[in-house]
Image (cartoon, rainbow, N blue to C red; front, side, top):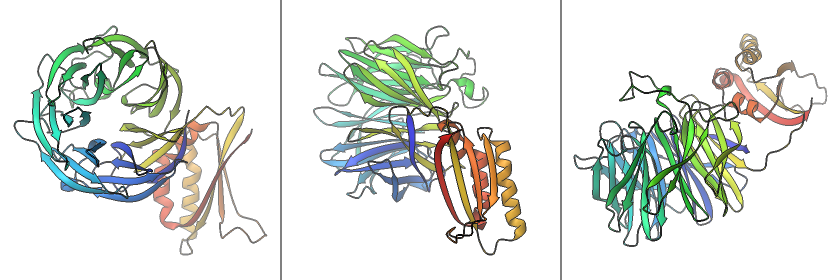
Length: 480
């Protein structure tokens, strides 16, 4: 079960994508959105500390795809600047901050326009950055990564009716018996493709699998990841079905059939091609609607734990993939916010963390979770106590309005089981000037998450924030 450890505000307009990196024993989180990248350190308790920010080219973005890797002893962050039609390369400095060293612009020869997804592929002769585009310039491109982080074009393959590279939002690489294979998902053309990658960074198509209305769930193919269990190589593909978009808007082919939501598992055969293997269908016990990111949380010899971030279910669904390639749900956490590619798995010592963010422009937060055994709460409920001190210049009318707004929040957030409030009447003189106490009751972890990141709560904080001088919040679990 994912349990929230911390959340921090970001300077960008939203969190579109998240990545992380360990450098010199320190752990860093990079949250990219419209306008820039926010940089945090992450400690072993999952606490986030802001350490800086980095503006994007044209101060636009968003940082739709980000990948961190070490190239010949130097650590780089590669960023797909979606609306800048460019790939930005940043050197990661010793304190985790960034220094731009390269800007690779789209040309008639490449497919970097509306660049979305990046994948580093290491070969014996060098390392290569694979780039997937969307909308006006669909296709797949390979660039050699120079020692200084600059990119040299190797090959581009334009999307056509055969391959599924129109809107590559997910990519993954397997190395099998000395050969390297790359797998892509095509969002607009509803399928997955397999490619062989050669030592010089060039590539060739192997096979392609499209959506069906029976046993494949690839309409709007979105996240792509993979894992090796035993002697088996698997590729896991999620999708944000086109049902969740306007038919006459973003989707190129509006003639689609909604046949449900599911995560598809493919097995890799001896030629590196994908073979349909199994599926996990969404039902009333899972949260798989609008999958936008799938992260591998942990891997043992015979099983892997996966985290599926969803935009439409606004949740993190944990699943187990066994050695036979069967995917089963474990637990989910309703985050209270939609996840739009902004989910990252990170390990510190023996602990597994997830860092998440949302595309919501009102939220502007990045959140850390620790994945640990589920806590048996029994019949306990959660008390959420908010103690406030209003500014001296706040009028009685302003305070009354703030109290009424807080009282009304229960009508907007049904996950609040009970709400009561009162004015401090303590005579001990140790109330630190706090005058108003609000006590909210939640029945489980899901309810608290939904409340914290609910639009109504965000609006409340924004509305009454200017007259608040101090606040003390404490939560505890208790028997009903």
